[in-house]
View (cartoon, rainbow, N blue to C red):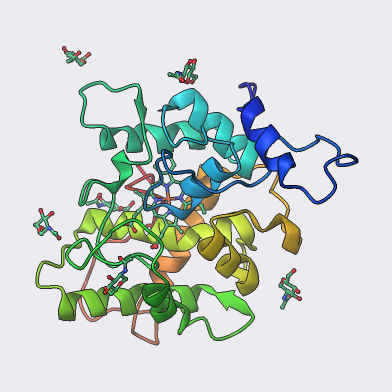
Length: 269
Ligand code: HEM
Ligand SMILES: *[C@@H]1O[C@H](CO)[C@@H](O)[C@H](O)[C@H]1NC(C)=O
Ligand SMILES: *[C@@H]1O[C@H](CO)[C@@H](O)[C@H](O)[C@H]1NC(C)=O
Ligand SMILES: *[C@@H]1O[C@H](CO)[C@@H](O)[C@H](O)[C@H]1NC(C)=O
Ligand SMILES: *[C@@H]1O[C@H](CO)[C@@H](O)[C@H](O)[C@H]1NC(C)=O
Ligand SMILES: *[C@@H]1O[C@H](CO)[C@@H](O)[C@H](O)[C@H]1NC(C)=O
Ligand SMILES: *[C@@H]1O[C@H](CO)[C@@H](O)[C@H](O)[C@H]1NC(C)=O
């Protein structure tokens, strides 16, 4: 992560103008949280929004170049550069311009490019705004988050519940095999960033705080990990894929292809 940290002087000035003791408060955190202003772009990804709110990504939600994504995912979350590059490469198709060198958070809102139906915290495009946090939808997911420490099974249950609700009530429900791969990565993400990957557990308070506020749960005691790499993502997404089975013996009725889960659109390669 040799890339320059994103920081902008105006952001710092505004965040400290609202701090409780402006005279004595040290200017030590260029990544203090600040929500989007009226001209800032935000999208369907709670983490990309969060990284923009903390100015790890450009706060205006624009110009997400490979370099800016590598810096943001590295400095904000501890993702290693290879992983961040791969994720950016798979996401830049969100910009409709051929051979684009950046995307914006608004590009991520394009329905059925990366954004999809049955999100945990957003309603389907068919019903309304497909990218803004939607508390009533989120509550239908958290209904399955039944203990203070969340398990892979609980998040997998909320994923299945959202798909069932969409399949039942959205006449235009769309969810392809590629969407499934992307979705498994999203459901694994809270364990990867905020939780314990080997046991697939995470503190529910961290995850709810993150979704609702689009803010890193630092004030709750969360600390960024040292290094998160692709094999860990594949492993955790795979565990979510298994947890999403409705069978109790881990088997299947018919022969099927071995499936490895992955993070955001087929990272398993
Ligand atoms: C290049 C980096 C990334 C891009 C381009 C990206 C893009 C997206 C997009 C387009 C969605 C919307 C899918 C939907 O319709 O539900 C999404 C959802 C999501 N992303 Fe990301 N993402 C990135 C990195 C991350 C990271 C590092 C995390 C780690 C926490 C994360 C966590 C999530 C979660 C939890 C969702 C599901 C939200 C829901 O179902 O309501 N993303 N992401
Ligand atoms: C976009 O980000 C790159 C770094 O990745 C930077 O060199 C460039 O100046 C930025 N462009 C704009 C318009 O902010
Ligand atoms: C995009 O890149 C491809 C491959 O390098 C090239 O053939 C094509 O002309 C480029 N398109 C534009 C619009 O620059
Ligand atoms: C409806 O479904 C089609 C085909 O899956 C898709 O291209 C389109 O974006 C969907 N529109 C909405 C609003 O869901
Ligand atoms: C939240 O989702 C519900 C259920 O689909 C929908 O009726 C409502 O309009 C959504 N709210 C927003 C702000 O999109
Ligand atoms: C989904 O991921 C699996 C395993 O990584 C891969 O074999 C499969 O081709 C992917 N499916 C799509 C449609 O990308
Ligand atoms: C989860 O985190 C919150 C906030 O830091 C803390 O109060 C709580 O004790 C944690 N829960 C568990 C079960 O460790």
